[in-house]
Amino acid sequence: MANIKSQVKRIKTAEKARIRNKAIRSELKTYVKRVQQAVEAGNKDAAAEATRLCYKKLDQAAAKGVIHKNQAANRKSGVARLANKLSA
Image (tube, one colour):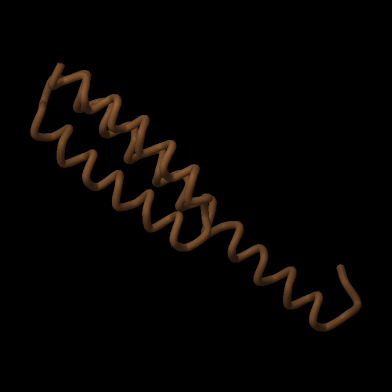
């Protein structure tokens, strides 16, 4: 453990951020899986709704700095490719 008071505080805040970021990343994976499940089931309406929610969560994560904005864009592209399988 650090001897410096400010460093002790930084360790505590970094741990809180790590836990929060881990939860958000896990949630992102869940939303992508929901899109995949809707596509596999062939449910176009559910896939569209899941895609919309997935986009929203990815944008929020990028805005908060949990993931990079380009990472969010790449994931959105992958989700769009999945969703477009139903319309093709």
